[in-house]
Length: 491
Image (cartoon, rainbow, N blue to C red):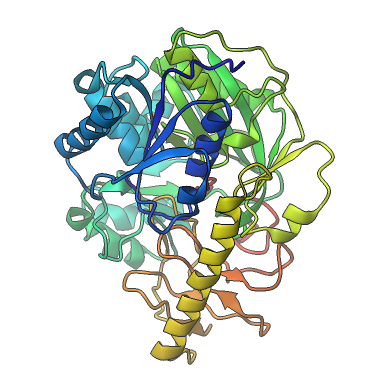
């Protein structure tokens, strides 16, 4: 008998168009295996998620940039088809922010955590997060918000180079404009040029001190804050491998006890009065040992299934249980459990995992998505290579101020060094990717989150060219650590 109330369906909402979002598949499987009817409101036409046997029905999503009223209209149509109240689970920041604003309007068709409707937006906004951390005494990289081009240049002098530039509300970035949520800048001119596009970006530009990556420095915490504010399920994890190295999404994560990270997560959510699923990204400073909060995501992280305890509880199941007034079982943390995204770390997916491992796409009880992922990934790679061949893949001299860029949720890609040949990306607005130096082929970057990856090697590749570090500090590439989610740890 299922611990969950299987009379109450779940609706997963994702506005982002990334077809390779494995977190959505994780939520589908987690609830579907427990007997819950799962509906997916997302663009799944080209996604392996649609092949899962645990999906009851797929529904068309709101358009990117849809207004709250448009999102509410879509959700009401889905609710009318389901015909009974459902637990709503936002799977990206834009969805979480909309759900927070619309909670009262969507009741009683949807069950959502009770908290201030603007709180998800407040913590997802990177400028406001810096203020939240300062008020709560949570370490956060020194961050400046310039009000003019002159202040942007002055901030570079104050923070030093390289530094991180972010748009405070990356979900507002216009599609096709070539603007990216996070940029590593190496000159005052780059910072000024970014600032001058603030109006186009739709939110403020932040300039943030760069914390160099290093072994065991990148951590994340996934949790669920229940109706009383107690943090249940989830736990602290360490990013063992990322793509790109040192600043990309989690390719291999490990459930690793860390009392300091847990204490920071519980203190912050407690002071904010946050309720629901959250995903925090931390980077430990190599000189002070302090854990700095980099991102607060008010929704499940893509690797949330890493934290499945001995009772089978994860943050998604915890949400469903709590909102349907069912008790949460007391399981034992499975420290050492691993999570592997096999299209980014195929060798890690094949190695022995004595303490347990979950793959992002492949599962013995749900083989369709894994098979579909490899087929879609192969076509995606072939298409990118053909595009490059058609466009001419001859090496070109780089622009001296080409920044490191990524889309919202996309891994950080370091800027090429002057004099290094570039392989031009075929799509407008996609970053230029440094050409391989050893003759090994590259898998071209995907349109949304997927960075370029070596075609035949796994974690042992050298990666893309790194940003030169400050004196005495390591660069971004060539390091065996760390986003997430799905996230850049230095952003």
